[in-house]
Length: 535
Image (cartoon, rainbow, N blue to C red):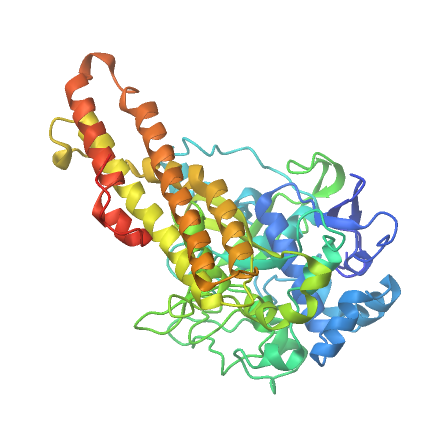
């Protein structure tokens, strides 16, 4: 099969129809029943396929100038035009027993000794199976997959590659990277797969200026599976931005894998449930594949500063709450560096916001603990923009976030105080308390954000009138923080072992929480002053 001509990408249309398409068909039916989303059987497959299509457009259809980008956004290409553009690269996207094969090692030989389930990131590893420790994710759930799913699984593994033991390299962005994509306003006219993909395509010049050597433009310097592996054992070297074309950021191949195409069988794909004549059941792998090091700046990931330079974000336990909003959107660049596609939108917004409504950032990725996938997280964050005073807007948003962080911590302390005689000595992970608080506050946060936008971009009789309106929002946020915290305290304070409950301890903890919620530290964070007595 060929991944540019075969129908292997599952999608959903606006009417709810589910179908499988080739990449060049993403603009089919835009006027009548547009394709609105990739609809893969797994969330990590959906994320990987979204990145695959962005990468393909960036490789084969990148605009020369921003004016070309704008024109193409408003007047999408016909499927035939995309098919013609993609056909130039068709030879690099064969997938099957003949070599080269998409994201498979060109030269790897050997016995197929790995079950096909090993391509799935959360699958239990060899040592886990040997010691019978596959308690939560059981073995034997996936024994055979169709070629379409195999392509998705291999792509998702190479894009997200976690630590896999000695010499099994991580992805170009490290194990389990966070991806942030620009999206049009959900439910809007431009909320189609094509328009959402195109939001994340940069001009060729902008893309090539991120990292990598644009002069290294042979096919095998862009698509690593077309050449022998650049090994990273004692005799090899790491792959740095000086060694590869910028597009390698999208097509990087850290894992050396060869699927077993010679021993397929007929049956039902364990992932899609579809009948298939050639289910794949195993593969072989070898360590010391390409080791991506150096100052790579992947356009789909935000970065934070460190002593070693910019480091890509990775999801952490607790998910992707609104505490990350400033960093992901770029309102506070001293805190982090947003993904290049987000930064580019910030430059495009004045020209294109009228056709996209309020855009969103779609953030997703695995929370990895070395080789263990702890969780898959996703979040959709509105990217509001204040034209008249963005600095003041950022300051206000930061105050909302910092105050929520403070309340989350005092809530956790109060609950530990209510549960334990000596809370400072209590062991165990109680991070679920703050995680729940952040989730509970999310709706309030975005509601108050909208109010801030309306005030700061609105017309006021005087500066004092604007200040008064902003103060009302702050007070409202303070009330929401207190209300949510007290509700969660009441919900959990008496949720433990009944005989261990101490009503006096609970009452004392409740009173202390009230004092902290009305105390000077929180009021100072919110800019409310400290003159008011605690209630």
